[in-house]
Each structure stands twice: as C-alpha cells, then as structure tokens.
Length: 209
Image: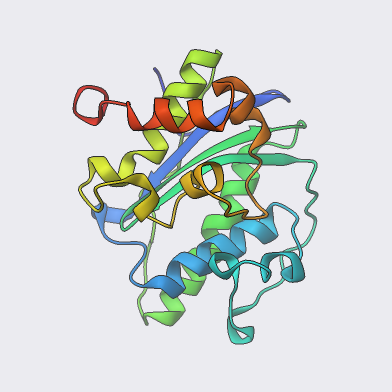
C-alpha cells in the first residue's frame, strides 16, 4: 500500500490516518493527555462539550477546554482509532469534499499547543505530516481495523486489545459507547459483533504487523 504526506481524497473515501511523535518521542505522557486528544478530536468532529463529557475517556476539566468552530458531524466519521504512547492510528471516512487534512491539521495543532503548554516544552510534537492510506475494498477495511485494534498487543503494552482503553476495540466488543465512534459500518462488514471479535483476535500480529 502506498502512502503520501500530501494527498487529496474524494467524498466517500475511507482512510487509515497515522502519525507519530517527532524523533519517535512520546506524544502521550499520562491519562489527561489521552483525554485531551480525544476531547479535541471530538470537538473537531463536531461534537459538543456536553456530548463528550458523557463519557469518561472524552471528558476534560474546565481549565483545559477550548473552542473549535466551523465543524459539522456530517463532514467526517470515525470508524476506529488507537492511541499509543508515541503514535496514533485513525480510520476516518471523508463524507464531503472538505479534505481530511484540514481535520487532522486542526486536531494536531490544537493538541500540540496543549502538550507544549502543559509540559513546558517547545518545538514540533508530531513528525512531519500525517500519513494516509486509502481503503479500496472490504478485505482491506477488515485488515486495517484489526491492525489498528491489535496495535497495543503488537507493541506489547497489553496481552489483549480490551485491556488498552485508548482505542475503539471496547466500543465494538463491550457495551462502551464513545460518542465519537461510528460502529455500524465495521459491524456490517464483519457481519456481527461476534465475528468482529473473532476476526480481530485471530489477527496474527507477528505475520501482519
């Protein structure tokens, strides 16, 4: 699969977006950092603070709240995500001609400002531009979903994907229901919840990652 730093996509494209910290450094140092990222991402996707504060993982204290304007829930859909200590993976659908680069740039700029201020640091937080791989068929979509959700297992952070709460696996495999995650597409592609769990857990991290 090819990827490029700069690329325009048409409406209806589903993309695997990923990036890591500058010099492979950490971008998340504690739970508040993970929440800050998800909170800002939710705002970028068009969700309100009230909606985001219903779930613990997307709740932020008042002192860290920000305003992100000109967003619409109809512009993008988040189908899966995984946040790791020094990188992130997102599976995003671009529903209109508004480019996903605008969404990611807004998110990463806001989060970088937060992180630099909180940790009293300067300089780039992320390494270059994000990478984007377009999803071309259902098989690739299933593979990418499993890749994303098994990333913490591959990196030996946890033994099972449900033990890493900073990804969307538990929104599919349990009763967790983060407002930012759209579950319908992946469930329909896998067939049902049981098939999603089975195929994800059967994903061979050694052979495929």
